[in-house]
Amino acid sequence: DIQMTQSPSSLSASVGDRVTITCRASQSISSYLNWYQQKPGKAPKLLIYAASSLQSGVPSRFSGSGSGTDFTLTISSLQPEDFATYYCQQSYSTRSFGQGTKLEIK
Amino acid sequence: QVQLVQSGAEVKKPGASVKVSCKVSGYTLTELSMHWVRQAPGKGLEWMGGFDPEDGETIYAQKFQGRVTMTEDTSTDTAYMELSSLRSEDTAVYYCARESQYDSSGYLTRRFDPWGQGTLVTVSS
Image (cartoon, rainbow over all chains, first blue to last red; front, top):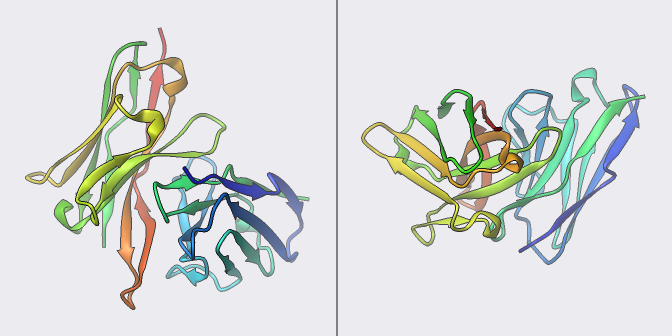
């Protein structure tokens, strides 16, 4: 099975900050990498798919990059509604998620 | 537009089974690849299994092999996830999610969207 490792596990930042979250796969997954945002008590929401494609309706301050084993999610200018937990997920083989990154207000 | 509506919360005793449903609207179930993901309280997302249209089979995470069964009733466009031999560690919110296979350019992408609202399953004696 492919293991996904996110870093950091938690992050404190301020409104307006640029934030980057990293996800590493235990083997190459090409570009089969998705990013989700989850708020407390809610289902996850798809933000980025195929490593860098922005899901319809998602603000352009979210972007993704990477291929192979190393990927990043960047939020260019944090907004109050962006404080949430973020998960990466690979769909190259049997699916798996990273452990999550909790983004908190500084 | 696809919408997924799940059944209500369940309380089960250890050793029992639970069957969670996921009703599809906006599409027919045969057009979709449905997956199931769970989340224990305060923990991350854990993929349980789902339909792989390339193989035409349901694939399960090794952790749940032999204990989980995912089925579909195409007459009602409802997907089901049954988990047996429940233990306290199975207490979690269970989500169904449609796995979209291709993007608008025809590239294979495989991503989960949308998701059901979640079903809380509590296992307690």
